[in-house]
Image 1 (spheres, helix red, strand yellow):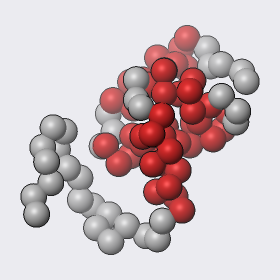
Image 2 (image 1 turned 30 degrees about the vertical axis):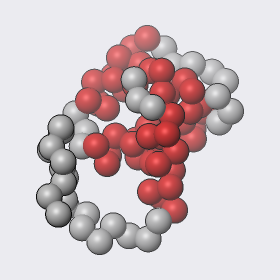
Image 3 (image 1 turned 90 degrees about the vertical axis):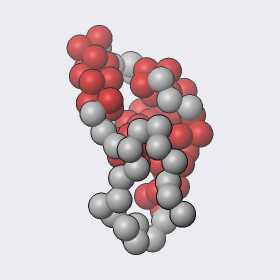
Length: 81
């Protein structure tokens, strides 16, 4: 597996931090998929997310369309029932 340059890694980290929780896991999943074998572990370390977050992002792509696509939970706030 080829790793990204320091500049690309820095841009990825900056971009990742600007995303919502849902978009973060989807972005991480795309990056890991592009890298193939070892991608999940590399992206997990690079972005500081759990490998399960990346796996959930992959599952998001397999799921039917999001019934509430514009809903974004604020960081650190539990969803209201």
